[in-house]
Image 1: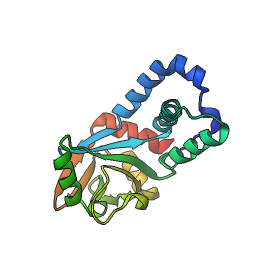
Image 2: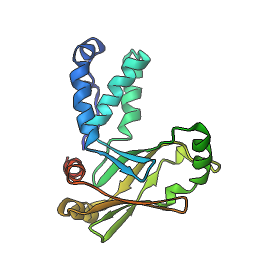
Image 3: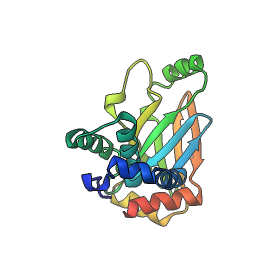
Length: 192
């Protein structure tokens, strides 16, 4: 999948004119890549389109101007654009109650060792979490992860109808199969 370049970013005045249509398209792309696992984990698999939308929205929200500042946003979000033979996701750990959230994020320390994709019941690919977000005392409620599939697991993913996300942490043990639309979207990303 190609990374984002400066030419992919629409100037702010033009973006304001197309924002509603651009946003609606981005939400459709995200919806097919959003997978709930258990009651409070949401995996949002990212691709080039979702990250272009994030860059545009950050530039808009933060009032970012100037080529160097825009390039910094592009470089930052390009880290979440998947490379060859991999999938990347934002993992959201969502609790409405702040007290419950604080307790659960402490209980979930070590989750980074307990998240995987199971492809066609044969390939188990462990998630790799962003080390910059790790804290020995509590988990951040937003995690950036990737699944390094490699060529063989990618080929298996592209030819199967059965992929699961599995969490095996003692405080968080769930399995969720990808639906047909989710599977098709991620296959599209792997082919890009």
